[in-house]
Image (cartoon, rainbow, N blue to C red; front, top):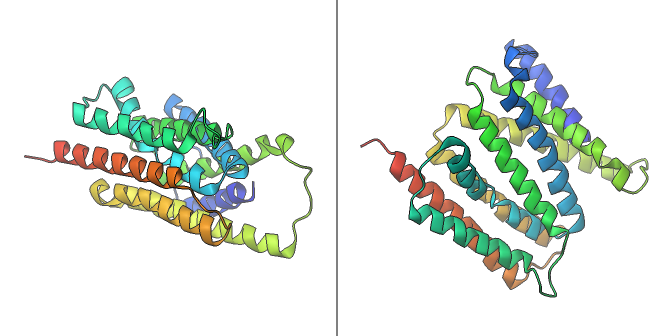
Length: 251
C-alpha cells in the first residue's frame, strides 16, 4: 500500500511537472484497463508468493514471464515463432517444474501464487504492447502505482490484523518505496529512449539480486533444484530473446 500510493504521488508530481495529461482519453481503452487489472493481480499474487514461500524460488519462477509473453504473442498478435524458440519455451517450463517439484516432498502449494503472478505480469506486458503509443509513459506509471496501492488493500483481509509499524519497519518502508519508485521510473525511461536489444537482458539481473538478498538478508539457502531450475529458466528466456533479436534484425 505504502509503495503504491507513494509512487502515485511521485508520478503525479512528475506528470504535472512534465505537463503530461493525468486524465487521458485513451485511459478508458480496453487495453489500458486490462493492463491495470493485470498489474494489480500480478502484484497481489507475487507479494502473496514471497510472503508464503522463499524469495529465491518465487523470484526464480517469476523469470518465466518473458516465455509466457512469447506464447501470448503467438495467440494474440499472430507472431510467428520457430521451433527453436518453442523448444526454449518448453525447456523453460521444465525449469519451473524443477523449482516447483510437484508430487515431491519439497513442493510448496503456495508457489502457485508466483506462477499466477508471472501469468498476469505477462498479460500486462502484452496489453502494454497493444496500447496506443501516444499515451505518455508517466501516465501509465501513475496508474500502475495506483494499482499497486489497491492490490495492497485487497490482501488486507487475508493478513494478520494491522499494527503500527516500528521505527525500524518505517525505515524499511521508506527504502522500499524510494528504490521501487526509482527502479520503475528508470524502466519506463529506458524503455522509451533505449534499444530493447540492450535493455531486455537486464531484466534477468533481478534473479541475481533476489538470490543475494534471500541468502544475505533473509538467511535462505536455495537448494540445488531451485538453482538449477532458475538457471534453466533464465537461459531459456535469454535464448528466446537473442533468437528474436536475430530474426528482427534488418538485413
